[in-house]
Amino acid sequence: MRLPRLGLILSLMLAFGAAPVLAQAPASPAPQAAPPPASTPPATAPTPPVAAPAPTNPPPQATSTPSAAAPTAAGPVYVVTYFEADPTTVPRVVSTLRRAVAQARQSDGNTGFLALRERERPGRFAIVESWRDQAAHDAHAAAAKTLADQLQPYLVSPLDSRPSVPLDVGGGPFNSGAGLRAVIVVLTHVDVLPAGKDQTIDLVKALAAAARKEDGNLFFNVLQQANRGNHMTLVAAWRDRTAFLSYVVAGPTKDFRTKLTPLAGALYDERLYEVIP
Image (tube, one colour):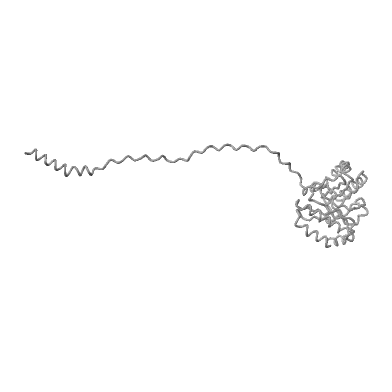
């Protein structure tokens, strides 16, 4: 009788106990899909080397612009030379210059040779020379070298020579040293920015035309530096200081200075000299 009862118990357990357990058993989790591989930047094709540009005609070589150089002249040649000597040697410098002036004025092709001593600073000198042409100037080269060598022991600064071409030359008794002894010779160095060169040429020509009409003016010439067309030298002679000062305050002079100032590349350099006869 026990076996049937045991079987009944087992049947009841299966019906009420085991089934819930089996029902509650969690189902095996479905296999998860493998995560996608980490994204990687797409490969880029290597940049092909940039081909060198096809050769073209080479750019033109840089040349001096009209604002930076004076026109080449086949005619007269001028040279303005500045230098400064030890003031204690002035008598010897003057003696040396007198000999050089006499020799130069006898040279073939010389049209003028002025030796000048600055009035306010006697140790500063200048030479203004003019020659018929480049060949005549070149023929004087040996004598110019001799003069430089003779002056060398007295100098406190090197000779500063400015080869020039005539820009507006109306004359001038450059060889009349004795006749100019009592007059005032004025050298004015005009330096403007290259872009203002052409405008300045017009200004200095207008100034020269007006200055020649001033009472007491003996000559007023305008030179242009050969290797720097924006540098010019005004070479003028006046009967006396009164005549010069009258020119300084004249309307055309003040107008010139007013228009020149915005173009200037350096200070307006005006120096008064006496002639060494």
